[in-house]
Image (tube, rainbow, N blue to C red; front, top):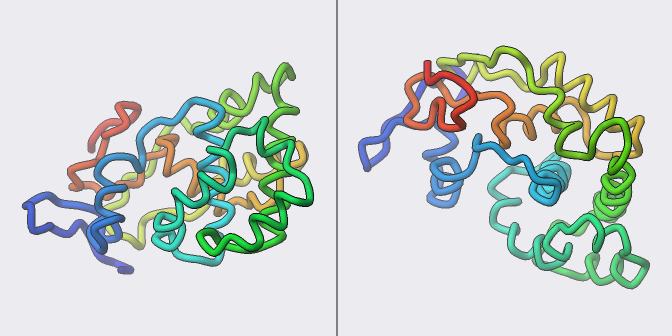
Length: 202
């Protein structure tokens, strides 16, 4: 998709190419991706799924999302933080999710780190993550122009790491920022450009 601009779907709407490449991705693109997520559980889920996505396609994760939600107790940080060895083994035998022990352990550790942010100077996970929202957003016209990292995502990854989070590098952090509307990387001309209400449509 390098160098490709918006593509028109059978419904006449223009989208960023990946959002038109599969029905499941299109539904996600049209209704959820890039919309603001500001609650702790919602952000913990997105953070966890982005970490599991590392090295894989987002479509793979999206197809397994409901199984992930079931396996990880709806991504309740309190519930996941309490997971023990039996839960780890249960997850490692769950064919519905990505069975990666390091990522499973990281998710449990990240739930505990999320709890650790409550009441601290960071103001909780949501306030901390959103503190990295930049003052401007990219305006890509082709896939080549879509960033994969930014100064803010590097800072976010570094900050999360110092607070006990794992599997959240600058690229994963930037993907999270895109997914929850902190930046708008819908290509210019997409019908979803500006959908978050946080950034102009052009």
